[in-house]
Image 1 (tube, helix red, strand yellow):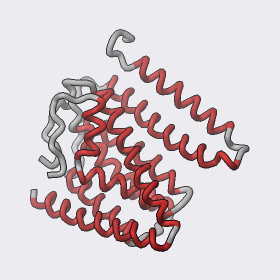
Image 2 (spheres, each protein chain N blue to C red; image 1 turned 90 degrees about the horizontal axis):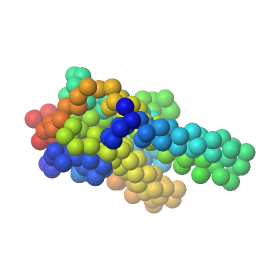
Image 3 (cartoon, one colour; image 1 turned 135 degrees about the vertical axis):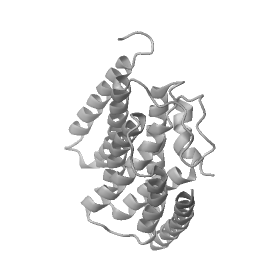
Length: 177
Length: 73
């Protein structure tokens, strides 16, 4: 199980813990930072800037109850795809990298918005998941700085391969659900 | 609509912080040694912009969906 559930008692802490409590969200967010570090500037900071924008759009769609394609497929697919991007150190054109990350951000945001507990503090919850997402990106960038050294790049690519394997697990789980 | 629990003061503070950050980023343009700091501030500003959009949206959405089973439950 990737999440232990959000529960009703939701505020800043619940929102902050939501991306951290699910391996699917967490691995995808860290992968965004890792991939940004591999791609270098300007994508190093553009990817973490683009992601929250589309994540918010997804959250609004989720809160409004707008239907989207199966969100768990999108989230699971994001772990697989971003893991592969890191493992392969793929240097996509800037627009393609941003579009990829933005598209996945929509699914992650939708999940956060859909699970936003109205009984407690929606503002705190929102602030929490935006901040936690940002911190996970920064964590990924921090780890990704190891790519400056050949040995570090190999380690980061191996980490990406591990994330992709987890992504396969999430995809199989999502499709089978 | 500025009573207790109103999102508008928070939104105002958020927008003011964004404006200050953008001002600082702009003022750092002529100083290459602070380019890393400017990048970090841009990322933080993007988080604050995302939060501001969410706060504004929550004000206009009549209801939030409430507790929904987690997407992987």
